[in-house]
Image 1 (cartoon, one colour):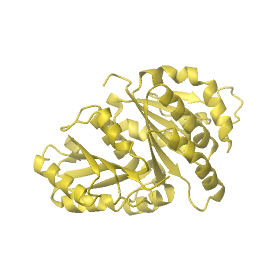
Image 2: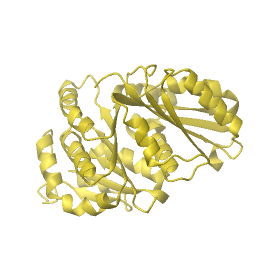
Image 3: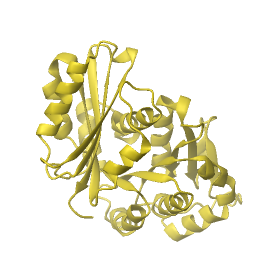
Image 4: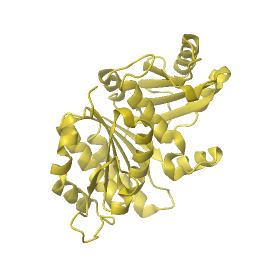
Length: 304
């Protein structure tokens, strides 16, 4: 892929944090765009293209007003249009429930689709204890879903619970978010042992229905347990048994063999629906010696 074909976009404060951390893992073959009403979000991101939704300097923010955020995004779209013209795949990371994420994310996804980009949105849903934010998230999700090729829900409640087990900060995605983005982009950038192209990925993710993230890792000699853990820990509360499509990225060290790949694939497929369409990508990295990580996008789950 040409330079700029892969674009990571963070919308809102939490989405921008996820985007920065994801980009740090794959900056060699992706660009980064941050969009927010709070200029402080852009501190510490010298490599990022930034769109400040309060560029007037009036410090209005977007509060919980999605239409205001959408309006301000359209006011500044000329600044980011060259990025969209150059991109083929856009990964949007955001959290719904606030004004910026709930308004600007869906509008950006729409603009990206109009520019012939494929759009993958990874969307955080607020805690149930935040009823007003949760209600706003539910109201705004369908528009983002419709403007994306695939839209993956991430339950912040579930993320927080699983992060405690990892002893990691849920606000930083606890490793799952950046692992998914890195796995996806590194495969499509063709830096792996087994490469998939964008059309392969599109075939999987465009199965009708919802999608979720599956992530599992562990020692090379515990492949069955790695797959089992991945299948039991989706970041949204969805059953994956009836999945119609599955994109699997397997990462290991230089010691990872074809036998390891075959075993992971067989274990994974055996636990999914018999007619599920599965595509496999694989890559190796020195820091994964003795370990294997599985990252998967599972699609065609239930209804919106």
